[in-house]
Length: 365
Ligand code: F6R
Image (cartoon, rainbow, N blue to C red; front, side):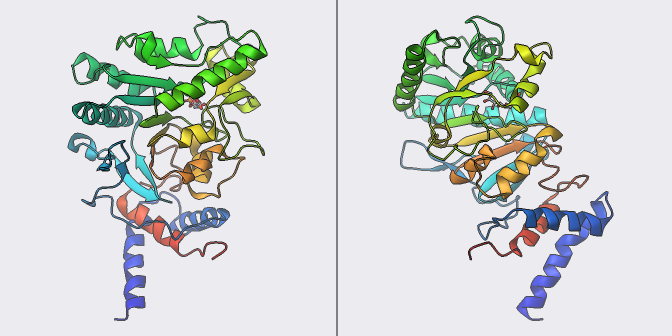
């Protein structure tokens, strides 16, 4: 058998389980998948076809020491509940929200432990919103078990509303205190977050300056992110002026974001602050490693574009393609466009997907 026909036969074999498991009419499911892939202008010979059961280290998280260590390991207890894929050099872990919360908290705890043994401090970049809540819950459990310590720990939050009275229960500072800081008794001197209510432009500038200095003092070893349904990360909203170099600043929130966040303000969109301060794309990309979480179908389109589409200022999360150490931790619903709705996300399915995507010649090649 020639090499070409052997490849064809292997591809056919990897397709078979998907044809069986796809809940849609199989040829339609594959057609849809092909269409989606062609939609993305940039497709990639960088795509890796690698078994997720591979024993090779999947990715290494840079640390300040020269030695890079594999980080994105799935603990044996969670292994059966997580499927792992590599797309455009980004790790994509599909699991349920509860397992995802446990998995990510373990990565954080382990990272901190490793650094502590060599006497190094750790800084986490943190996000608010519903996506990281279970990560924080698990960090609190780890703290209570004595597995996680606040010694030499600093945190810097991504963003904060810019026109909410300090102390308002929906400020991100209050959110962080309620969901994490109070329970792990993190002293105020160790968590850093924009003030929520500057009274003048000067105060506004000083606040941005203050956070910029902190970013230099405390380089982040891991940045946690959520993603908005419009693809925002932090409060970097879609917009033509957004670039890979955009830094921390005050922004006007997109209508889509105000709508999404109105659930925290008694569903009253008029009560949602109109502006916020946020770290920029450049600040996010400066972290050693990035973990981005998403649950639910509302994020599915943005995720598919962010991972497989071109880098596009109208889809801010696509800038993550410019980072070498990104792990997406998402549920099946959030992956439903990336991997095809109604499909069981299995190893063979992922292989088929990657195989098909490899067949699309990349633009400019
Ligand atoms: C929050 C933040 C936002 C959220 C995003 C998703 O600090 O920066 O980008 O991560 O809006 O929000 P949830 O998790 O509530 O769906």
